[in-house]
Length: 99
Image (cartoon, rainbow, N blue to C red; front, side, top):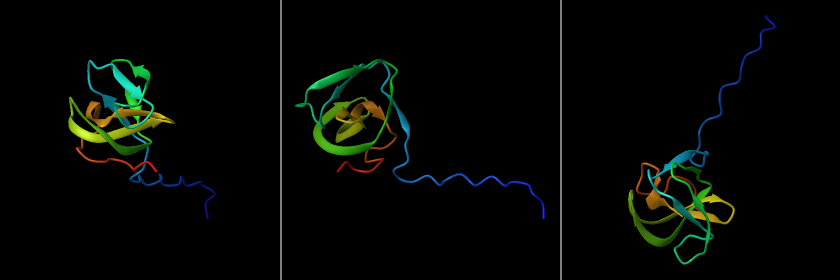
């Protein structure tokens, strides 16, 4: 037998795998404290930003460059952006729903 080491295969991707998505071009996007326009703005993402989705929640329906949707993307603890401004390539949920 040889003492060569064999690399383990990469872990399979799951539905909740972390992915980064582009914010719509030319948009400075409000980040809110909850999934809706009634929540306070906690910061603003600059043009050309990318976001990582932790989970998604239903909330206020918003119309943006990528359609009209009630889906809000949780990008950090207590930070949400409307999915209407995030290029996920889908009109529906692309990751787990937030608890």
